[in-house]
Length: 402
Ligand code: PLP
Image (cartoon, rainbow, N blue to C red; front, side):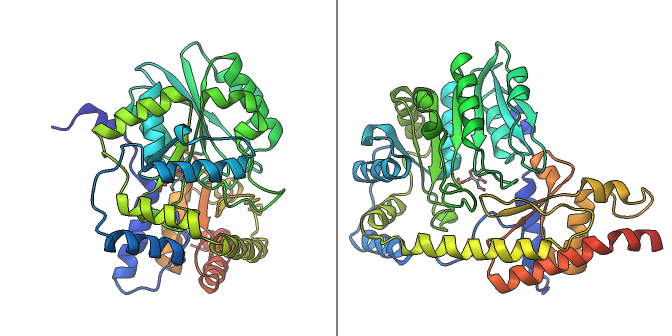
């Protein structure tokens, strides 16, 4: 008999979508996997060289539970440059990916019965971690076309039990980038109600409209003492499997993480820590620029292809590397007697008939969405999106004929 908390965790819908694509590929089909939550590209040479050097030097010991001091210092320097706000080594915790930073945050600040505001559609780990900590997710729905939270709705959702707000800009799955006014208003709500802000910025390198990424601590410096700013190298350097992330937070959260990590993972993988340190010291920024250019091109080509969709508005895709389609109008127009009635059916049809993997919005708590990654190699992306457009445009007539 498993512990009751296991029933609180959502099925990993995004992982299930990828798994289905992998099973189809293993059966010999040429699958174009647009379900991936990672950019398919070789990692930077500097990271690989740093790892090899650490291995060859016989590096094999535990590190401090919150990471190597020189790495924490290098991350502080990077964050200082990116945010224009000063950070020190003592502000930084090295984690096994953003996921561990987010779990540290949940375990450090939440008590049973606390409520946490989460904007939905959301990455499914947010509510699952809140539930694991014994607290309650309180969803505030965000709507197309912007998927930016409505400030009045957030204010209305706050109760005496609210302890934190989780924000994720640039966003997975919607691709939304929150504007400065929204970030400032969320900051004011947090201050007025004494809430923590957990800001997941792990797609910060991927902003395609309106300049560079703006963290909530830049938009509203007054929230710094109540913000846990979570980030990772997973997406930025295309090293999702290496498991290296970090967060910047006030001293009490850093101390809590030191304890938590010493009792859970001991420390993030030491070879990965050295590899990233090497990259931060000797990387020339070429990889990051090339990655941004590639994704910018992929987004432009993808948006052009998706503009051929009927009954579905082109997504904005301002940040991250996802096109998030709102299928509400299309689904509503399909006959209830047909075999495609939900976005899950659409995702299944795309995989079975056109060999394209996608993630239905149900994985993010949204019955209307469909997420397509543009982090796949360019030729495959074009081929995959053309098939998606053709299939979705044919749905209505096909169903009527069936
Ligand atoms: N946060 C968001 C919003 C994500 O989409 C993901 C991965 O998909 C993560 C965090 C996990 O990052 P990491 O692999 O660094 O743990």
